[in-house]
Length: 145
Image (cartoon, rainbow, N blue to C red; front, side, top):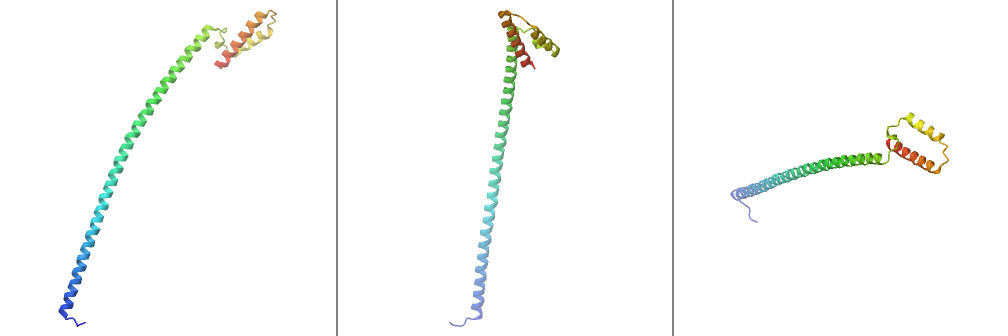
């Protein structure tokens, strides 16, 4: 291999430097493009997340409204059922009066029990009616107390 002159060496050095500079520019451009792609991807992901959160908030608000409406409907239904039960009980009390047992106090109940003990009836019909009265009073007391 022939020996290179100073000018040739200088030109080779300049060529290498130019190639390195071009490679460095290409690498910088590639890195800048990757950074821009990453930045755009981050923006896209943030936007997708924002849209998802907004959609989720709308869905949750709608679900909350639906639950609130269901709760109001259930409360209304419960009130209607309670009113119905109260009317039915009132009607049953009217149809089957039990010597005003719903207003009985503890002393009234004790008096009633004493009267039960004192009952010495021998007539089956009276005994049967008396047992039915005891049963109605017991059911009334059990329900009210």
